Image (cartoon, rainbow, N blue to C red; front, side, top):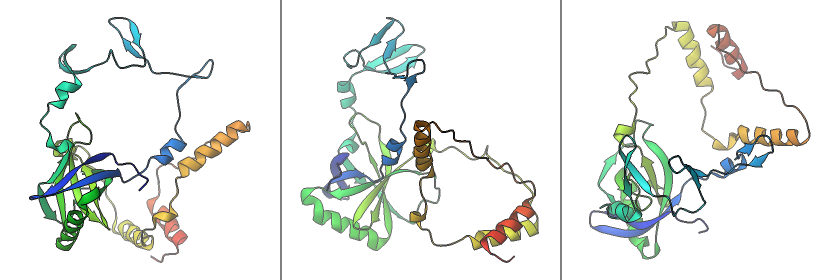
Length: 262
């Protein structure tokens, strides 16, 4: 396996424990293709990001010897925390993922999930891993646990679920991190005709999901922009459509475009 694991430890349910590794389930390769840096406008030189101490009126160098962690306890009042201090935090989740409960069904609220990772057995843990995977799939359950991805970092609530021949670990937001929707109320009156036509349009556009048909248009446009800049060409900004004024007319045109019959 060419991918590098980002976490090593154990996975356990009940008294069964197995060594596992966590791998990223997604890649940021596309982001790298369009990554930009800050330049000094007059000379075009790439800017560095020095650390500045306003009290000593000095810039800190590249090294971290003069930098420590601090927790704010009051206005401009801090407690210094060293790596040794943070290492004393009693967090077993830095080296062990213990499934605390199983449940059937999914998470109805799509806000819960943050990132997805792959869980794989490490060396001698294959048999217990396969047993755990097959038992979960057979029962149709998901597992809830916690993990600290790095030493001295806060815990992350996570979901463990069967995914083909491996397990997927999905990091979740904590309940208090989910913003309530009460302040985002939407009101609007629609007619029966508008609703009927909109439903027909939705049905006519409904088909099997094929992720292969979608492409990253931003990356392609970004590369075209770079090529145009190098060639001294000027690219005009696209015209952005404003709000639809006549909804019925827009629905009729949309239905005609997809070949549906209202």
